[in-house]
Structure formats: structure tokens, C-alpha cells
Image 1: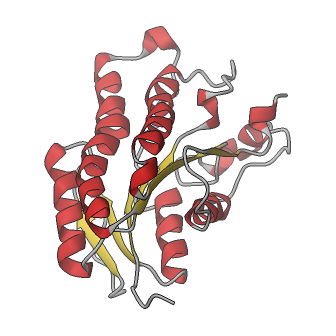
Image 2: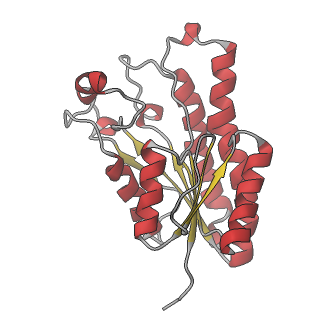
Amino acid sequence: MSDIQKVAVVTGASQGLGEGIVQAYRKRGYRVVATSRSIKPSEDPGILAVAGDIGDPATGKRVIEEAVAAFGRVDTLVNNAGIFIPSAFTDYTAEQYRRKLHTNLDGFFFITQAAIPQMLKQGGGHIVQITTTLVDHADGRVPSVLASLTKGGLAAATRSLAIEYATRGIRVNAVSPGIIKTPMNPPATHQTLAALHPVNRMGEVEDIAQAVLYLEDAPFVTGEILHVDGGMIAGH
């Protein structure tokens, strides 16, 4: 049995899904590099907090460099960072469009491009994107073209990268959540948001963290978009 302590990098890690995923990996014994704009240093020696704007090309490279400097390796990258701006399509502003692309797509692109060479050097790795079921199952009650545009791009990139690196030891998957109880969704909205799911409740952060860990433990799974959405993908 290997005595190597694995290392996961999690973006958008200061709260909500990212924070939950960080804690799930720590419980597994991984050391974790947690990054977001507002992240604070951790008292846990197994967590390295790296503050920065993930959409900045320099940030992704720096996060991976600091991970290797501190912990010696990068085994998993969880591209969780993302912003959601619900709006009618014609009401989106140019600034909102740029912000979405900057965080959701640039944030994925630059850090993933920096992580893959390190994973190849180690002989393999795992990359996971957090997308949304709205990509596959649009809902007229939640106008969200920019979410579909950007997170849909991540879903397509997940499949493409999975095939590109399938013979080189790197698996690439995604988790596609429904609407989860996070600080993004204030309690006053929970009843309305719960009704969007066939199971008539919102998801919990732990539901998504467990899905990420399932993919971590599934060596024969790559190119998968795992829907954890209370039945939204099946219909209404």
C-alpha cells in the first residue's frame, strides 16, 4: 500500500461547495491547496490557502507552483470556482458576460493547463469540474444562458480532456449539481428553489462533496458528467 500522502487543489474554496470539498478531502487524509479571492490562511497544517483571482492567468500557475513547493505533488484538481448570474438573456450586460467567462472558463483553463504537466510528471492524476444540470435541462423558471454557455463549455471540455489524456493516466470528470444550500441562496428562497427539483428539496453541500469523492475512487470512470440534482436531469 502506498504511503504517499495525496494532494488535492480546490478552487473557489472559501465557502459553500468549495469549502465542503476541501473538508471532504482532508477527512480522506489528503493535503489540500485551497484557493479563492477571499480565502484566509488556515490553522490546519494540511491546508495551504492561496489567495488570488482564479481567472488571472498568473494565479493558476502560482497555485500549482505553491502546491508543489509545499506538498511536493498535485494528484487532484477540483475546478469548483464559478459565479451564477440569473437574468433574461437580453438583460445581461457586457460586464456580466466578461465576469462569467473570466471566472468560469478562464478560471478552469489556466489552472488546468498548469496542473496537467505536473500530473504527467507524476504518472497520473484526476481533474473534476463542477458544472450545473441547467446545461442539460434548461428551465424556463431559471433563465440562465450564461450559466449554460460557460458551464456547458466545461462539460464539453471534460469529455474532450478525458479522451485526450485517457492513455496517459489522467482521468477527467464533472459533477453536475442541482441547486444546493450554500450562501449563494438565502434561506428566504429555499422553498421556491426546492420546488425546482422532482424530490422537492434542495441539495446539501455534502451531496456534492460525496459525488466528487465517488469519482476520486472510481479508476474506471473518465469523461463522466455525474448529475447530483434531485432528479432534475430526468424531467419534471
